[in-house]
Amino acid sequence: MEKQNYQKRLEALKKRRQDDVLLEKSAGMFIESYEYISEGSSIKYVLGAMKAVDKKSTDITLGEGERIKNQLDSLKDKGFDVEYKYQGSVTNNTHIRAHSDIDILTIHKSFVTLESPLKPSLPYQGNPVNDLCDLREASFAILKKAFPAADVDNAGAKSIGIQGGSLRRKVDVVPSNWYDTIKYRETRLDYYRGVMVLNYKEKTTLSNTPFYHNKLLDDKDTSAAANFKKIVRLLKTLKADSEHKINLSSYDIAALMYHMEDKSYWYSNTPLKLLENSLFFLKRIYEQDVYRNSLLVPDGSRGIFQKGRAAKEDLSLMIIELMDLYEDVLDDLKMTGGSINKEIIA
Image: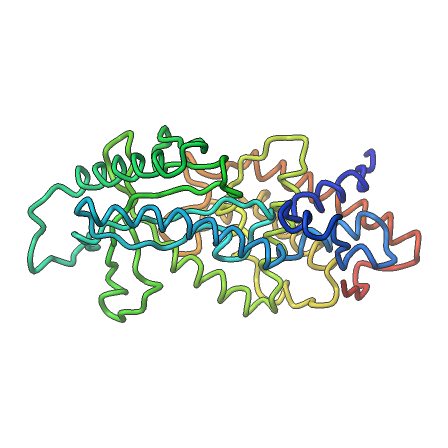
């Protein structure tokens, strides 16, 4: 096996993590903490890939989302009762890019979908799908007018994409309505409340529970000694840098690593052991068909590997990337006489 060019990968990693706007103010790229350690390049890559994106960059992303929301507020002048929520990897801190996209759920408040067998006391007399289509068309018109220099793309099934012009981030606007689950009605805890997302092409809606998903990821990270999200970022980075197209979404990657037992994460100062444990865990999923096919996404709504979702072949590609990195790390450790259990703080 030919060793990866980690200098090239480190440059790509750094460029991906650092924000152009902030760099202009500093007149140069920031030195990141992992660059100071006296370890081989593959080990620096592991540590850098695990780190969260700088909060200042994330704040810029959220700020661009606020700009879009401020323009969409004119929906109220057109008779729409709406509110907004964010979803996606930025909201659960597993994003790996300073320039990460952000999703704005644009929620039509005139009606609520109930999880069966809940029944409404006052059934809605309108047509929810038609009303969501109207919301989408009105949102598109507002954004086209407000951002004439930007690319406002209305071709997506579930969202309007807007980027370019004066915007420093891509923002996806997702028309939806509230979906009250049984657990939400029982507890009134906001994270149990879901949304119904419009599929504009098919004129249908699909339930989603993004806030419960984030709550589950946060809980997992807590029980995993704050190492679960580090591994999710590492795998997403490997996917981004791979020469192969790995069709595992961010959601798939988080769902897979959600199932690794907590004690395999309890290595706070030994990040290379986390790498080893993750490799062995993914190999176990690949090799054990019954176990793999039993795995559900964190909220339990569907299987990870059901038809049309994550595929065994893409898991194989991810394992190859992780195996190559693991073997390169072992080679770098041999140069210094270190072991996979070496404590490293960056």
